[in-house]
Image 1 (tube, rainbow, N blue to C red):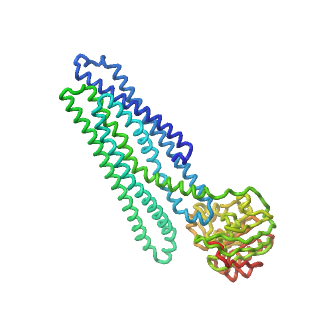
Image 2: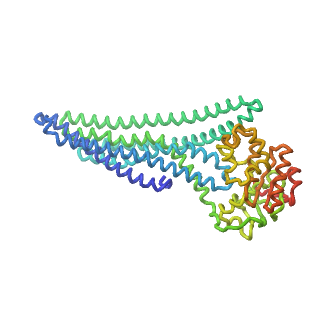
Image 3: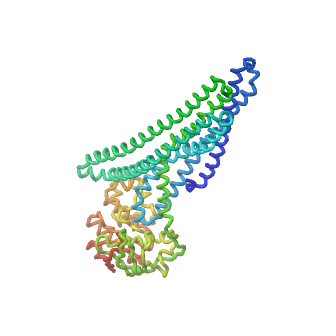
Length: 540
């Protein structure tokens, strides 16, 4: 867990310091109380407040010291837990967003579950489990040693009962760890499916099928509830076992001490010291057992987070070179990307010339969209390369290269916010009105209640598929970037709007920009100056 951030190491050091103070104050106060009570009971002459003023002040100081150490521990734990969760969430988001589109699609649901809810389970890990674990390492052996100094028999009883608690904790922990991993997976699946169902409700309502998702969501919720209740049953049963073992250990010490006090086998001060310290031996382990189950969900999420970070950390570093893409042809040399099955597809070789419309066409799954991702530097090729101004795209500084690209994906990226914010999501649009007219989005704006101030939901909720496509086209056509990449730009458009958009795309090419279109419709092929047939399986 120290991999999460440097602050975690400072937190562990502070936890150990607070644990040392707490353990010392606990043991010292137990010894003081035992001798104080024994003296008061056995010697009537000492039953005056003045006689024990200094001892009572010492006892009050020890209690105050213990309380202060526990308060400091709780404060530090809460602060560092928030910092570690935020830092780990940032690392996960940085890792998954730096992955290629294919890798990101595979990790999206897991990353969303980990960041949005899973890592919140780390708070009990930091605030309860780790402090209890440190205290068990410090207080338990120290208390046993002190008990042995006063009564060897009581220490022997404690040592016999004590190993049973870690043994049961290990056995229960093995079951709980698997259950926590299963719960995280169930939560990931539930979240992904619910989001998909919610996003599709407008379409389902339009088709008169809005009642169906209610039952499906209820079934998913019931499955998650059963998983959670199963974990709770294990937690409650394990807590019961730990409490019974701890109670049994203390009871055995109490019976042994009581019998020997009756028959004069030990002094009252020694017996009281053993009795007061016996619960302190088991108390940290009981806390560890109680906190263990609450921390396992967070630990499972953290393990998944480190897996996501480690998977992406193996990607090669980006280049640092820069080029000017304006007026420079793009050369695809023997380009291929191995698919998920490990098959090696045919190579793709082509030259994309500025000032001309180049259309990539071919059957579904041939790799047309992946070719655009390779050109953009988002997906590394298995073999071959994309060259611009004599430089491999893989050697370019990504931000400098992306600043010269404008890319319209199959599903335009829309975020919660206003229409204006989405139009300028990737940077300012110099000729916004002209771009909206070219994409047919001006008609959409005229029908929106607040125009560009209209607020959209996640994924563009509030607009139809065709309206979202027009927004993405307006954003791409309005960009001043010299390289324009279009993936099925006329999908979901009516014939009139399609003709307007294709005319605007052709005009950008005639200005000297580099225009690449993925498409197979006759209307798209009709405006092509160059057609590249992608027949091999460049990617899946």
